[in-house]
Each structure stands twice: as structure tokens, then as C-alpha cells.
Image (cartoon, rainbow, N blue to C red; front, side, top):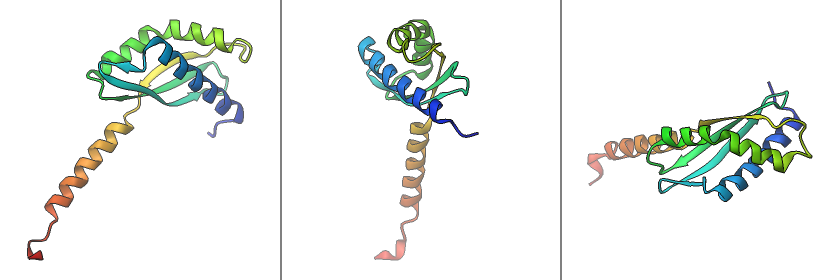
Length: 124
């Protein structure tokens, strides 16, 4: 099902505000790595928001995800302070990992291996 215009607007606004909160709270840098929000999707009733986090060079992804799960209430409260005039109810937040970056690195490694094994020996 396609997202409505209102869902996209709320998701974009949530992403912008969450990025600001992450920078303010120091959540954008963990364990010497970077955390960014790759995607925010909102349910049609606007009561749940699923936030996909992209972790770059973070040592332990599961620990980082647990940190965000533990801080969900605090983050939601800050969102409420910022968006109280725009939304009737602040959506519940669910954090998950976006594995697209890992997939890209894996595919690049596979292509490198294919290219290195496909070199013709008759090229001399």
C-alpha cells in the first residue's frame, strides 16, 4: 500500500527532528562510528513510527540498537516538546537496523573477487 501525503510529511518531519535530537544528545556518534537515520515510515493512523538506523563503523550493532531502545522514552518526550503543535499524538518509536550498507559492502567484495578471478591469462 502506498503512503499518503500526510504520512510522508510526518515521516520527513520526524526524521528532521530526530536528527536534531541525535546531534544534541550525542547519539549520532557511538563507539567511534556514525549513526544516521536512513528511513522513517509512519503507519496510516500516525501512531507508530519505524526508524531505520544506518550504523557505520560501530563496533557492536546490537548494543547500539539496545541503547536507542532504552532511550526511546526520552527521545519521544523531546519529540513531543518539538511537535506538540503539529501532531495530536506523538507516535511510538521503534528502532531497527538498516542493513543496506552491509549489503553494499558484501556485494562490492563479491564483485572484487569475481573481477580478480576473471582476468584472462592469455592477455600477454
